[in-house]
Image 1: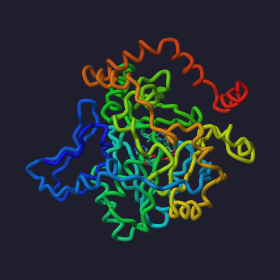
Image 2: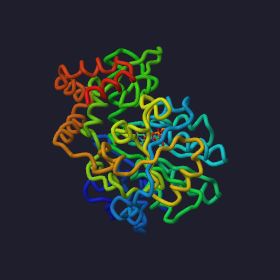
Image 3: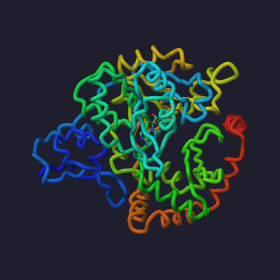
Image 4: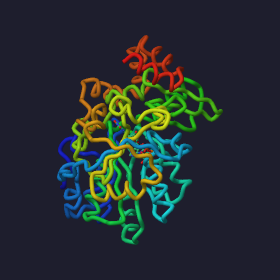
Length: 396
Ligand SMILES: Cc1cc2nc3c(=O)[nH]c(=O)nc-3n(C[C@H](O)[C@H](O)[C@H](O)COP(=O)(O)OP(=O)(O)OC[C@H]3O[C@@H](n4cnc5c(N)ncnc54)[C@H](O)[C@@H]3O)c2cc1C
């Protein structure tokens, strides 16, 4: 019987094995922490070992090196508001769709399940906008992508680096009509833990939550979450007030493999890498100001890792504000361009607590430990974004 992985930290659940299986013998199952893992049905398996061969996480070493790096912001200021950083994904994807292609990325469904979907028009593209800080299930999307590539359709695929590497391993060859975009990634918690967190929040506040933004720009550029209730109320989910956001940012609820992510550096699988340009005000003060970047609306980093990545940025230069930078500057304050998130003992402790007693117990632990720190979060969140930036500058 084939063993897809020996230890849990050897599987990232990219889904390449599930997509390649000629007998549909593989399905994704949740473990006790809610993380997805592929499982083989021994009655259907024909021992062809295709699943082992496409495991990029275990078998493939990335050799791309950064060719060019920019600080970047979308010229479409309206779309920028709903994007996580500088709106680069949406802007590039919109161009590909306008030219008859499609974009692939992560979207919420009505039950807050996060799945990779294909967007063929502006309406469905909006669902891909914004970061969802929980693992997206790629399902059988790689098969659909292959069909469309063979039909000569232009595709822009976005995802965590392990998902980009998974897609490429599944395809097994280069396609001129595929552009891959990997996100700088802090690591992923399970989708199950996020949904349980929302249920606990609904019960605590006695509301029904209909939408959730992990990066609500109403409070500026940063990790400002907001839950939107069915009665139009906003509930802030900030670092110091939300158990999920706090534990996500600390890396305490990530999958095992995220702590040894081989893509958290300069060798990236995508044609292009995008993320936040944290620390732009210190790395490039010359770009900030009235005629340059408005930092409160979000700033991205774009890294071209391949010739195709360079050509893509060049082709869509007209819809982006691009500012020359370097990998060194972009990675200075962006930890996950240097190394994976550190594995701390609290991660195992919190995941065990969740598996045994559910998110309510995790939430109680958070409330007990956070103490007075939470008030700092509330006060900071009430200050206008521009004022916060000025204050930060002054304090430095
Ligand atoms: C789990 C996660 C961790 C991240 N960690 C970091 C980090 O440590 N440092 C950093 O600089 N940037 C990080 N990012 C990237 C950042 O949050 C933005 O997604 C990125 O800068 C793109 O912003 P944008 O404005 O161009 O994209 P938008 O126009 O807002 O589009 C969002 C993009 O993110 C994709 N996406 C959203 N959720 C998921 C998901 N769960 N899985 C896969 N793809 C998803 C969408 O498909 C789309 O491509 C992370 C993103 C995710 C999803």
